[in-house]
Length: 112
Length: 114
Image 1 (cartoon, chains in turn cyan, yellow):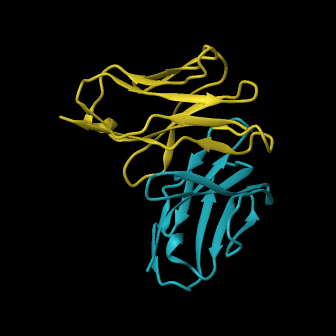
Image 2 (image 1 turned 180 degrees about the vertical axis):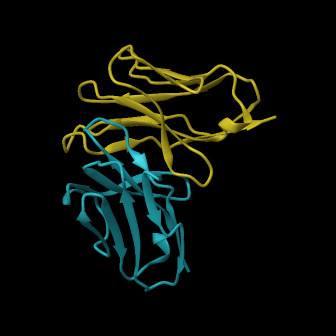
Image 3 (image 1 turned 45 degrees about the vertical axis):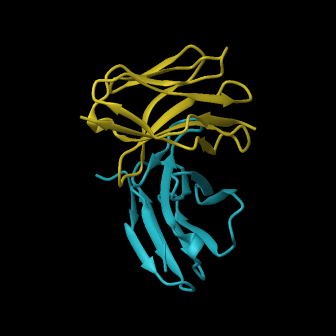
């Protein structure tokens, strides 16, 4: 029943490792997003895909690479993890432009 | 570009108190305005929205009116409950990129005590 689901919920890893976060939505939406939320709750958009095509690519280190195998999935791969990557990463999806976003419950990434 | 500014928190209230969280915006045109709520350990969820000037969005006892004259979209609730404790975000679409990007305020944490 979950509309936007992301895995894993928690991810603890060491500096220098490579990790992936997966996201799936069953709402039939065309557009999906990755947001990063820091410890002060500030939300920053990272990427957006529309029907498997990258449409938003904010100023994000190229260690972060999104991949959308189909419009229901948007994964995030992070290479060479750094301490500053520790945050909560949220996946979201949306139907029509100007309509609300639907968020997943987040993946808390801790880099030690 | 479009932007949104909301009051800093935390806001601490007793149960049944009146709540106001201020939000002002800068926008090209008249985009929809949103309030999202984030409960502890969860993702954001839409609380209410307004699509044009003078519209009032409402949900779960919360209200916000889209005011063009003051470029504001303040969130109000007449009587808060402990279960309303959460972080509240004001948001609007970016004017660039076909309104595909939603811009969020910094968030206001609300703590309600019994």
